[in-house]
Structures are given as C-alpha cells and as structure tokens.
Length: 222
Image (tube, rainbow, N blue to C red; front, side, top):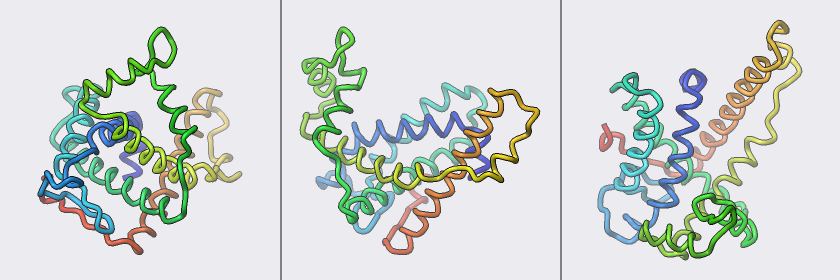
C-alpha cells in the first residue's frame, strides 16, 4: 500500500479530499434513517450503507479518471474501490476513538471552517445566502450539514493528533542525497515524512481494530 501511495501521491490526495466531500454531502441519511438495507461495512455497530460507498466511489472515480485518463484501468478501479471503503471505515474508527477520548469540535472551529469555504463566498467574503443556496441545491439543511461537518472535523482532528507529532529522525534526514537541489530535497523530505505519518496512522488504526468490532463486505463492491 505504501509503495502505491508513494507512486501515486496525487491520486491518493484526490481520493482523500473526495471521501471527505462525499461524507459531508452524502453521509446524511441512508441506513442511519432506515432507507438502505445493504451494508458494506460496520464499525462497532455503526453501519456504512452501500449508497454512501458508491457515492464516495463515483466522486473518487471521476476525480482520478480525469487525472489519469486512459491509464485509469480496471486494476486501478479495483484498488480505488478498496481504498474508498478503507477510507470510510478508517473515518468511522477515528470518529469512535475521538468520541471515546472526549475530543470535541467547538462552535467557533465549526464556524471558521464554514466561513472559509470558497463555495459559500460572494465577493470574496462569506455569504449566508450563498451558504444556504448551496445547501438547498444539495437538498441538505444547515443542521444536517453542520452536524456532518462537525463529525468530519472531529475525525480530522483525531487524525492530526496521530500524524502531526511524527517527524523524520536525524538518520532519515541524512538519507536524503546531498546532491539533490533544494526543491528536489524538499519534495523527497515531504514524501518520506508523509509515508512515515501514514505508517503511524495505519499502526493506530490496526490497534483500534483489535478493540473494535469491524467488518467489511468487500464482495458487495467487487
């Protein structure tokens, strides 16, 4: 997985963003209000409905295919499905962990994110009417959106608490070839740091799996 992430860094960044957007705008409803009987995964009893997965996957596929074009083949599609499912499950696990630790997102934090969203701006500044119009077009109420956004921000906060303390060791920094120019060296340093933080996150999630009951029905997405 880490080799794939290193090779297709932009691909996985796009995937991460798409999962977040899909979760916020499409994570409302589904099995949570009894309308979807197909479950692609469960995390400690919380069900992830098939509709949520396919909406997340479709948006990920649209973004990735526009980046890779004809190179986005069946093998990449299969890998993308697994990554989307893994991302949704990981978010659910991190949410459970954050909640159990008493981590919260304040109203000020929520308001700051909403007011900094370009989609809700008009004339370079946050517009309440633009905000309401965007939500209305997506058939989402402000209460639904803000609840889902607060949830995702909580997940993001938990992820940062795991990843941000991770830094490259002196030995790892010394492994960067001295002949590289400053730009190439900085890029390599960023890649190595990102991979190390991904390993830290993966290790944390693996630990959560040992304490949570997690099931994934990959047969439904094959």
